[in-house]
Image (cartoon, rainbow, N blue to C red; front, side, top):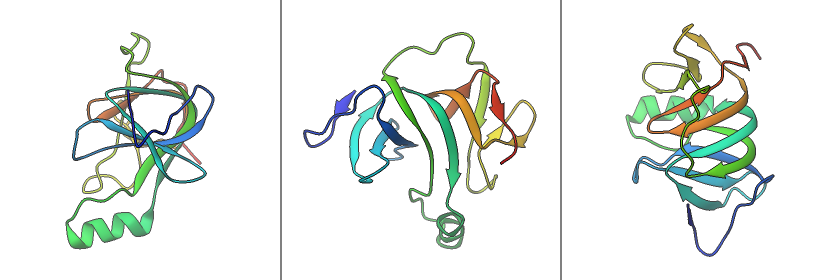
Length: 133
């Protein structure tokens, strides 16, 4: 994990995590200040809420320009860890294909995750999540 501008993130902090399209890693942002705290190759959160800003998505679709408008809020566990085998459900978001984060196994929107592992271009969960708001 690489801390940003001398800031740090600690286990138990409530953060927003989103894919940084410039670096391919994940940005970890403080949920209160909205300031980026760190960047990491992988991130693990618990008690997660999936958020897509409708107005941000609409603007992205209109301008065909990428911007931060979707993130997952949760309690920070760790970063730069390998994915555990039990994280076998793929949670995916693409503004041009989906309106919300989607569980690819059942092709339904996902709003809450018990635990999440961010890696590559997707989020993995253990299958324990809420498919409805």
